[in-house]
Image (cartoon, rainbow, N blue to C red; front, side, top):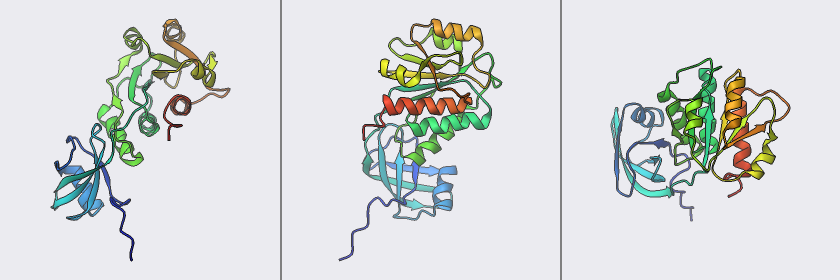
Length: 250
């Protein structure tokens, strides 16, 4: 007797949508999402598409109507519950386009709850295309299986970030002048946290002094080598997820 094919099929395309999902909900797509499903993935009537909206988990939907420029999907069954996201923020100074895009992509893959751009004095970039960064977060979530997108906040100046910092959240930061080895610091400071990484040129002395003076700040060392800003962000996030996040919860 032939085995029953797995459902939903592992080859089913996966897509983020703005529609709030639930049993029986119809999702009408046009524009780029429809082009991707119809022209790239060759979805036909009766095929399965996996959808997520950032809050309702993942849903298997059936293509009910497929046209050249639009497609209608119907949610049939929840395939993943809403994601439990570790309470970790990544606060990163803007850097060159390709590198900040990489930070956004990897932050999503690693499980960051919030991506907070922070403007510092030595930043060579003072503006960010948040729409482009959001697109990178969406694409990363579609690929890595997340059901919740990281919150992408408007860029703030460093002094405003420190002034409005929420009580009870540790602020780890990569201090080029030295700090506690990150593994030791994370063992001593559990709970809600964030990691602050500076731009290509690092924090200037006055900024470093202001950060160190903040009651939530924990200066850490990321080892003996000089790391690029994007490498520091990815490395610190990975260590936090391994020690205090959800990497050991499987």
